[in-house]
Image 1: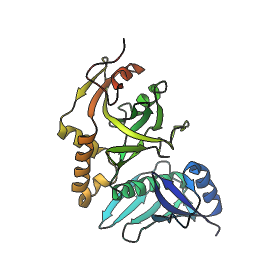
Image 2 (image 1 turned 90 degrees about the vertical axis):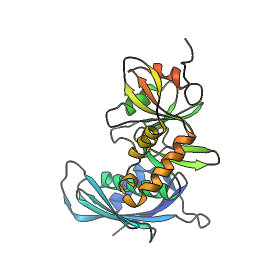
Image 3 (image 1 turned 60 degrees about the vertical axis):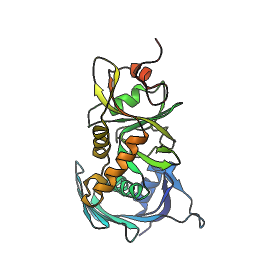
Image 4 (image 1 turned 135 degrees about the vertical axis):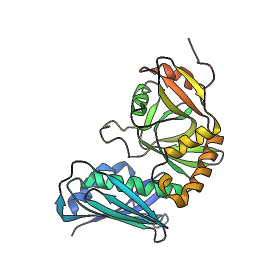
Length: 282
């Protein structure tokens, strides 16, 4: 069975990714090309992952991912696919027997990097992230709160890193946000996915007829960050560590509610750096 092995590099984390058969390998190479790196003996992979498409494939219309943490392992049950992420062995494997293998691998990689980023003292955040001259602004909120809308409305002010999942890693006195290939599946324009920059503000979106910033209590800010940290926030063994990390984030970065309407007027409140208590401009 023909396969390929390449380095999938995201936010400096290098995963040796192997896929079988050849048709699946070609699709994965095309899908993640901007994040594929050449093997380098001086930069060994941090982790290895393998995805295998079996001969018998069940037809599925909707993927439902369930993840169970068991010690240093995460067990994945995805409609027509199963997998395991082993932190102790530094490897992961996914076996796919459905008709949507590329989508299954996408969910597998999302879960894998959520775990690896946490192991690197960072957080993968369910949010939309945009990079402006002032830095990166992150929009959080439940599904339907307007994350994709806010990022689209920001096109004249910033470049979108992602509209669904952004990686945050500490660096010196800053938190750096990295774009990822893990967008909402319907999003086609992904020009900013390989960009990164320092985070200057986190905003919980609130649809409103008025536009303004509203302070959040420290507890509410931490809860919002925790809730939007997928995979790890469902692992009881790592909950206290994630909570402490969210507290560290909330201390370093302003977390506020952003009341906005369906236009770009909210950008008057996001400049200068990190937002302000008064809008800028006329």
